[in-house]
Image (tube, rainbow, N blue to C red):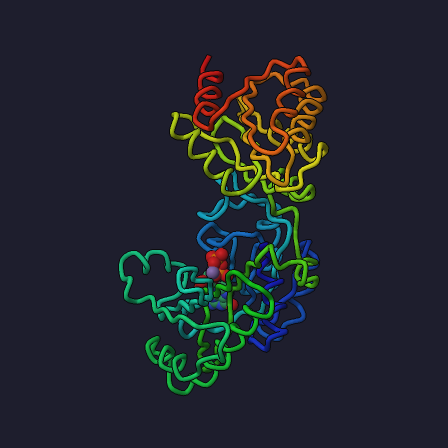
Length: 387
Ligand code: GDP
Ligand code: MN
């Protein structure tokens, strides 16, 4: 789950991580009121969307007066921001963060993420932070430093101190860095984050380290024990079909092909997508209905798949283990009738109550195509949509 920058900064404050003063604003008037609360005369007006790259796309502006705050807030609120991290259609800006300006001395890059091969947390940082970090990673990979940290052990202060020296953090800021990196690490573990990214992390001209930007993603599987984080969810920023699917306990990811697939189990869903590709077509989605799909869940899954107008055919691939093939068959029949299905449907079902499932499908009188193996199923749907 993703959250906005201003929310991530609230979480940072809970972990004693310094961030600039700032307020989330939903209107131009609120933005002006917020700016008037600051003592300085430089303000930063920041679009709040679940994507980075805002600076380069015109979503972050430095204002030198209250009038400029008004001007930038009016132009950014309601704008459709297209950055290299949004979809090509862009994202509507509904919220702003108005911050007190910070005197930047130096910009660092800092992040924490999960390194799956080592089963550790990887601290990644660079002394060349800022808006061109992707370019730094390409042209000077050595400027990006990494340190693997075992989350089961104490925070390794000595190694982190050496890491700070590798980053050329000035000696008089080392204690601040050590404390801050330790706090980021504590946040990462306690809040079940999957990513903490701060770019830029700045050293101000007066020598303090401040997180100027903030991106935090959380592991969806841990949200059940993070009620405070769940409250920060902003559904406006998520794909509506994916939100609808998650409300029904379905794992759905929209893709850009034309063959919809309904599968139980993530591994089988991946394999099904591969086999569709193998026979020369592309999947329109990833959809895992899970182990305990009911008839209603299957019907909802069909509705979500078919709301994608590019879909020209559907491939159902079910392995009946805990899931019974007859349950799926009943769901398929109900959904096809309710939605008056007009695209070809290929069904491959194998496992528990397979015969009963096939019986239900053939008794239904629906014009679906049955297949025995996965490759047969894929070949049949590919040729059906090409007709
Ligand atoms: P992103 O482009 O979406 O990653 O947005 P950022 O929050 O990183 O902002 C983009 C850039 O704006 C930063 O890299 C900074 O250079 C600049 N910026 C943001 N806040 C301030 C500030 O308080 N003072 C100054 N001088 N620059 C800022
Ligand atoms: Mn940034």
